[in-house]
Structures are given as structure tokens and as C-alpha cells.
Image (cartoon, rainbow, N blue to C red; front, top):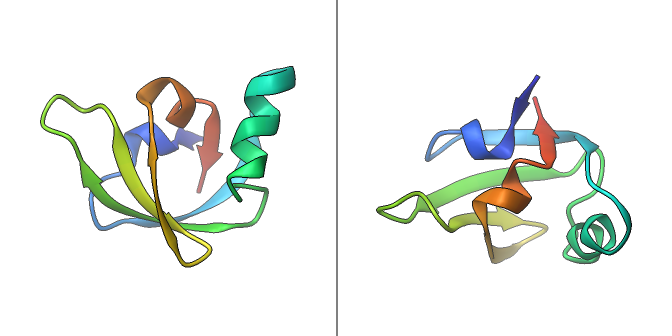
Length: 73
């Protein structure tokens, strides 16, 4: 499986699984990124960090470290 970090600009992917523990996983879920959610990759900063996505109708920026914890299809 690939992670959200590996998704390209313009890709629409679906969240399959969240990795991570405790507070980090909870924070990702609080942002609306849960299993089965559709995520659209809008932009990636020039150095690759952060990644801007659209999820549940709003824009969100994620660090690469957080994007690696999100398994997508």
C-alpha cells in the first residue's frame, strides 16, 4: 500500500488505514481524516513539506511525517 506522502498532485485517494499512536492518531482523526474518506491532493510545497489536501470540503495542510502515517488507495 502507498501512503498519502507518495500521492501525486491532482490525485484523489481514499484512506485505508491510519498508523501512529495515541495523540498523533487522534489529531489526524480530529481533522476529518478517517477510514474511507476521500482525499484530494491539491499542492505540495517546493521542498515537499507541507502537503495541501482537500478533505470533507475544506483545505488542510499536513506535514510529511503525518502524511506518512496515512495509508491510501
